[in-house]
Image (cartoon, rainbow, N blue to C red; front, side):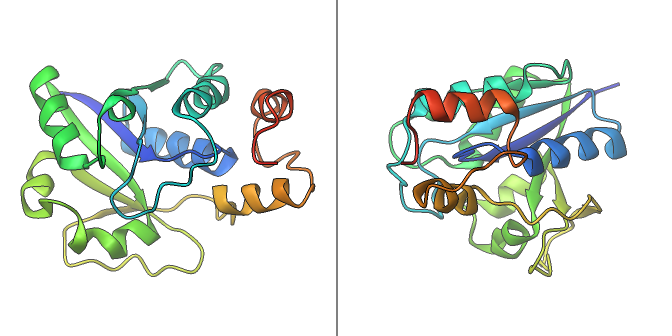
Length: 189
């Protein structure tokens, strides 16, 4: 029997409660044994934000998931030069964990973008894509995507960066430890 592992990738700049709820709901609904948060250095579909360092993003993720024994972080993409491609990472991970069945969790915005992913036709043979509902996105793609419903929280990292840049609080949007870290390190000001 294969170990069922969920992967949640992203920039996590900063990580917020919607990320944690998506991960937890996917773990429960799909019967996953754990969720691996996979922060990327430079995602292919976004320009580098230049707002926070890899070390700061990694620390915020560690703080956000610290109290959940089913969550862990894998920082391999942060150490790669150039763009981070899910295909390259999943080739590595399937070799490292040959007895694992991977579910790659993506939001509705990424479901629509799937046809543009690097080596998507090979990637869909390596992972089970799981699409979660996200406000303002249909989540339609020409691929077999397992869909799950999660509570709709219209929170995004870009919204939080905008609030912080405007001097507005982000209390209740992120775990307390993440909020403290952001304040202590004067991030996003």
